[in-house]
Length: 294
Image 1 (cartoon, rainbow, N blue to C red):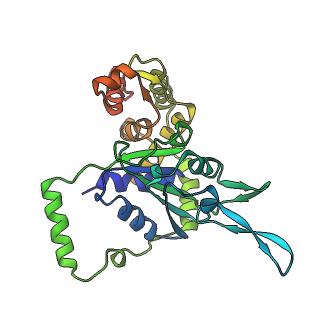
Image 2: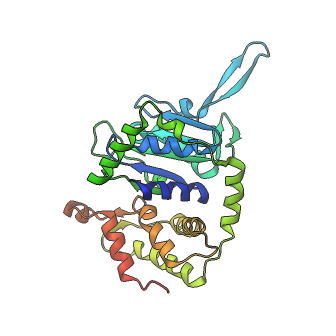
């Protein structure tokens, strides 16, 4: 069912971006992330975020080696290629901040030393909607570091029937056993380099700049998108174009990635929030107010 979610996760993998997946419990957020990780022959680790998790549980900690009488840094679970952070909004701000440097600069600083992350590196985080009990709102600086925020809805009735049928026919076969690696980490790094070379016309770059500028001057938006959002749209649309087998970006590629890139980067005006207006509705209004280049 969730074809769009899978497509966006693959685009993020190719565009060197992180993914935030939001949905109610039981819609296969964690399973999808695990299966994507399994399709890539690279390091994988999972971190379950809890209210008592400390930054050292994520990054690692210096451990005393009595034989050599020195402290050795024991790397934490974040030092992997594909990192699944489950229920990211259940940890307090102190632990969230440990991810800021890791996600943007692909390195971790501990005790005055800097440790680089292995390449390729991607964080796939899942979260339940903020209304759920025992959750914290993610800081804006951290949300901005996610390339996409993917909203996972409930499946339709026909999709649910197909899920039931599929699991019934699988019998004792585990879901994880069905998926085999199709890419290596080195291949992903090479594909990322190729994707950066994809052509994008000047008029499309102007369209992206105008779109982002509109978010900063819209009456419904309290806080608009940053220049990081412009770069995210450009890189993600190149990845979508490559997935379609093209070496150039079309306006449709840009329009496809705009909602998942902007929905977590803009903050609505308080009066609009009170009226129940959603970020996606405002993004649609902005797109309709602009002339899409052809």
